[in-house]
Length: 199
Image 1 (cartoon, helix red, strand yellow):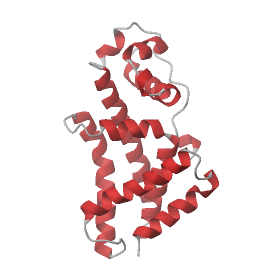
Image 2: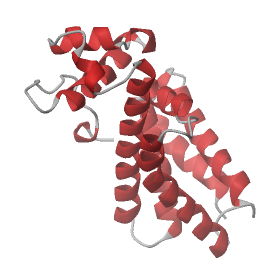
Image 3: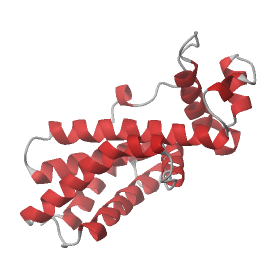
């Protein structure tokens, strides 16, 4: 993933009308630098230079903040995946590799955020999450269905294949993030992982 696709390390300056996105930018930075325990409304208010009560106008509590943070991550990942698949042309194998590579690069660059996305993403009651995840899930599901219909993906049960693909790619990303795989080998690992699923 290019540097233009990753989140800028410095949050956008706060001015009237954009406190919510500013707080989400700061939350992601705090998550990345200090861990999830440090992501609190009070800490975000301090870093944004606003009153302690100001964030509560946008997030009812810390859980609402984490839901919004996860939703923003899913939206960004969905946009990246859809763009990568579209850019790959019409060949299924090229599209599949593009999706896998994009997911792995996002997971490596945003490992703490991905943990929040997967953990908070289980909250099916949050409309914000359902809206944010819909494009990503639709694109991924459509690609898997197409691969199975073409006979290009191994297996025949989409409900079994989808989580297995994600688990495999997340495993590659986790190894890379832990420096168990050299950065120069990530693309080759993704390629090999794709070959496990394609015919």
